[in-house]
Image (cartoon, rainbow, N blue to C red):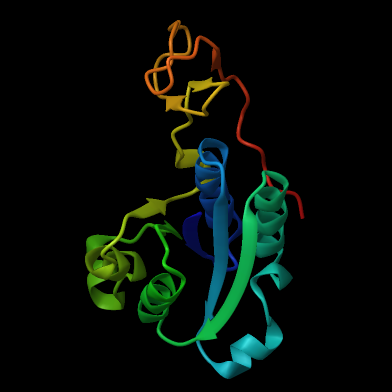
Length: 181
């Protein structure tokens, strides 16, 4: 089973981008487990929202990923975000961490720090940092047999899948699905 850790927050746009990225893994693999993690600053913050799916973005992510066939786990923890993400990744044996990064100026990252930078430097496993849904690069083609994705000009004809040799490589024309609250 391929384990993905998806730390989420209350930002709908970032969580939607993370969900779209994780859906690529779900579409390509047979057995994917996604742990939705929300790290709360303190116990008072945690008391208001006891699980990731009680936050609208978390609920939308959980539903979309479950509908795509992923096994979903939910975790809520209190503490330092970067440390808690790394600890959770280690505990669950995550193969991949998918973070929703936010834009900060170099000075802002220096002054306020960056959870994404900390996790990237210390993870010891692949980390994908998404931005907003608008900035996601979408695949142009997908093999109907194995799910392999391609990033090319949509007018390019791909006759054979580089992964499985299948001849059913389809052009993708759909726009990203927006989450509904």
